[in-house]
Image (tube, rainbow, N blue to C red; front, top):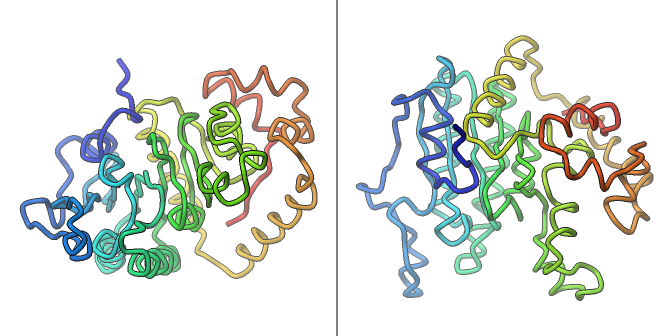
Amino acid sequence: MTSSYLEANARERIAQVLDAGSFEEFLPPSKRIVSPHLGQLDAPVSFDDGVVVGRGALNGAKVFAVAQEGGFMGGAVGEVHGAKLVGLLKRAVQERAEGILLLLETGGVRLHEANAGLIAVSEVMRAVLDTRAAGIPVIVLVGGSNGCFGGMGIVARCANAIIMSEEGRLAMSGPEVIETANGVEEFDSRDRALVWRTTGGKHRYLLGDCHGIVADDTAAFRTAATQALKAFKNNPTALSLQALEAEQAMLEQRIARFGDAADPLEIWQRLGIGKPQDIAMLEAAAFTALAEPHRVKGQA
């Protein structure tokens, strides 16, 4: 029996991905650590500020974990939300965790506290890179209905590995933002097929932005996260300038190769996939098997 990752809330996801009963939450709702900015604007607050942080175990390995709550302001990041993320990452380094799991679901930064949120996201980026530099792998899971957008989309790409479901989405700007800025001719946010084939898990996997595609099942995410952590243990590669430069070169080549493509399906064809419409309909395992020989491979 499967349990939908998409339909679960933050606490359900973190409890089901980690070993049963192992999660210890830091700053739980009972502490009532809320955003001071939202209260000043008479906006609703959440007693955990929309993010669950703590430590637990993944198949016996000591890990620290974060789960953003998409049901509160779309998982958007504010000052307190970001501070909880940064604090967890720093504590993980101090306690020499075996890995970090970031269960991200967010539309980006809260407009209510934009400057504080932007600063918070930049601090999260630095903390992720510091964690990797300390030899601790950071693994991102994306499968919530809000996707992973904005500054947290950049945070995700700073990690060692990203695991997505087909339903998950990853990008810098969301469809509505692009449409508002450049018009519906540039990007029609109501065209759900276009949205998913542009920002969805399968497209991100083929472009090398995502390291694994799984079914919409918390057990599948758990298995993939366990495998990613094991892969790092077997090949512990620290963050390096050479790896970052190789990743930058890959991105430059990707723009040169696909920059003029009008639709993601055209990119799939250039990657050597003969019938992209057919492969787009496959389940995660079958899609991965057929797509693996064609995908762009990242470095960092």
